[in-house]
Length: 242
Image (cartoon, rainbow, N blue to C red; front, side, top):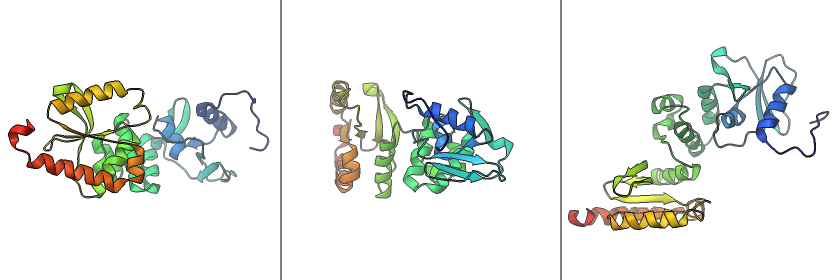
């Protein structure tokens, strides 16, 4: 911003920027996405910076900076990674109130996975918390949301499969149907993924794998494949399903 400089060779580290900004505005506290990132939730913390300042402050929002003027209860203020920020509960509530349902669910899923809150807490914080599960990635949550919005049954999340000593991203136990999301690191672990899939298939499980392109660009095809696989498994004789 005007009058503020940094060394041209500094590494673009969001945490350093957050420290610098709070030194510039010591009466501020981080909120929204900036606070969530400090709690290690996977959001952008600095586009924009989000801060709360006292009601009498002369600071105003501008491009790259969202300023909220309000008093905050001491119970909702904490220090995270050395910086003043809103509490976990306050941060999650603030984010979920303004986000679309699937984005709010992604935030609450991450809060569960990071053990920032438990199931009771996320249900209390926002209605979408009824669906929250400790998913491993935002795209796994998007896949689950797609299934639920289509009226498909609620799958188990990160479900253990004892026969192969593995976990399924999403799992329909009645149909013995495993759904896996293949992210950007799938290529690096392709050998292990393929071996695990072979073990699952040999143990009598049906496995479907999906990518971000499937979820974003071919949602109808994803739903057809999951529905067909679940229906086919349900009609197989019990002996064949074992």
